[in-house]
Amino acid sequence: MSKYDPLKQWLLGLEDAVVSKPVTLEQVRHILQFLPESAYVLPQWWENNRGHVQARAWMDAGWMTENVDLKGRQLVFRRSSTL
Image (cartoon, one colour):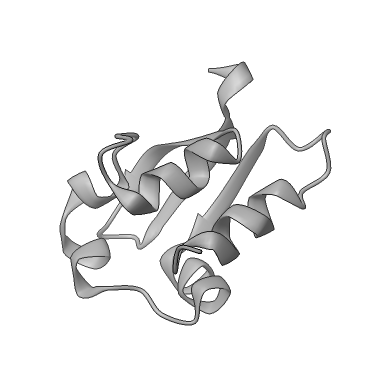
Protein backbone atom coordinates (compact mmCIF):
# COMPACT_ATOMS: atom_id res chain seq x y z
CA MET A 1 0.00 0.00 0.00
CA SER A 2 1.29 3.42 -0.99
CA LYS A 3 1.18 6.42 1.30
CA TYR A 4 -0.67 8.11 -1.59
CA ASP A 5 -3.51 5.55 -1.62
CA PRO A 6 -5.85 7.84 0.38
CA LEU A 7 -5.76 10.30 -2.52
CA LYS A 8 -6.42 7.50 -4.99
CA GLN A 9 -9.36 6.29 -2.92
CA TRP A 10 -10.73 9.82 -2.58
CA LEU A 11 -10.62 10.32 -6.35
CA LEU A 12 -12.20 6.91 -6.97
CA GLY A 13 -14.99 7.89 -4.60
CA LEU A 14 -16.02 10.98 -6.58
CA GLU A 15 -19.27 10.66 -8.47
CA ASP A 16 -18.97 9.64 -12.13
CA ALA A 17 -20.58 12.91 -13.20
CA VAL A 18 -17.63 14.85 -11.75
CA VAL A 19 -15.11 15.30 -14.57
CA SER A 20 -13.11 18.18 -13.11
CA LYS A 21 -12.29 18.69 -9.45
CA PRO A 22 -10.48 21.86 -8.35
CA VAL A 23 -8.60 21.38 -5.08
CA THR A 24 -6.22 23.31 -2.90
CA LEU A 25 -2.93 21.90 -1.73
CA GLU A 26 -4.32 22.06 1.80
CA GLN A 27 -7.21 19.82 0.76
CA VAL A 28 -4.75 17.30 -0.66
CA ARG A 29 -2.69 17.53 2.53
CA HIS A 30 -5.83 16.87 4.56
CA ILE A 31 -6.73 13.83 2.45
CA LEU A 32 -3.22 12.38 2.74
CA GLN A 33 -2.56 13.59 6.30
CA PHE A 34 0.75 14.95 4.96
CA LEU A 35 2.17 16.65 1.88
CA PRO A 36 5.91 16.91 1.27
CA GLU A 37 7.47 20.34 0.96
CA SER A 38 8.40 19.54 -2.65
CA ALA A 39 4.67 19.49 -3.54
CA TYR A 40 4.50 23.16 -2.57
CA VAL A 41 7.53 24.32 -4.57
CA LEU A 42 8.22 21.95 -7.48
CA PRO A 43 5.72 21.95 -10.35
CA GLN A 44 7.15 18.64 -11.55
CA TRP A 45 5.84 17.00 -8.36
CA TRP A 46 2.37 17.36 -9.91
CA GLU A 47 3.32 16.10 -13.39
CA ASN A 48 1.36 13.19 -14.82
CA ASN A 49 4.41 10.95 -14.85
CA ARG A 50 4.00 7.29 -13.86
CA GLY A 51 7.62 7.37 -12.74
CA HIS A 52 6.45 9.28 -9.65
CA VAL A 53 4.62 7.32 -6.97
CA GLN A 54 2.23 10.17 -6.21
CA ALA A 55 1.25 10.51 -9.89
CA ARG A 56 0.54 6.78 -10.10
CA ALA A 57 -2.03 7.25 -7.34
CA TRP A 58 -4.13 9.75 -9.28
CA MET A 59 -3.45 8.20 -12.67
CA ASP A 60 -4.42 4.71 -11.46
CA ALA A 61 -7.67 6.26 -10.25
CA GLY A 62 -8.28 7.58 -13.78
CA TRP A 63 -7.36 11.22 -13.17
CA MET A 64 -4.74 13.67 -14.39
CA THR A 65 -3.56 16.98 -12.97
CA GLU A 66 -3.79 20.30 -14.80
CA ASN A 67 -3.68 24.03 -14.08
CA VAL A 68 -1.21 23.57 -11.23
CA ASP A 69 -0.78 26.93 -9.52
CA LEU A 70 1.81 26.64 -6.76
CA LYS A 71 1.67 30.34 -5.96
CA GLY A 72 -2.10 30.12 -5.47
CA ARG A 73 -1.70 26.67 -3.92
CA GLN A 74 -4.30 25.01 -6.09
CA LEU A 75 -4.72 22.63 -9.02
CA VAL A 76 -7.37 20.75 -10.92
CA PHE A 77 -7.82 17.02 -11.19
CA ARG A 78 -9.53 16.01 -14.46
CA ARG A 79 -10.74 12.56 -15.42
CA SER A 80 -8.31 11.07 -17.93
CA SER A 81 -11.09 10.24 -20.38
CA THR A 82 -11.98 13.94 -20.65
CA LEU A 83 -8.50 15.20 -21.58
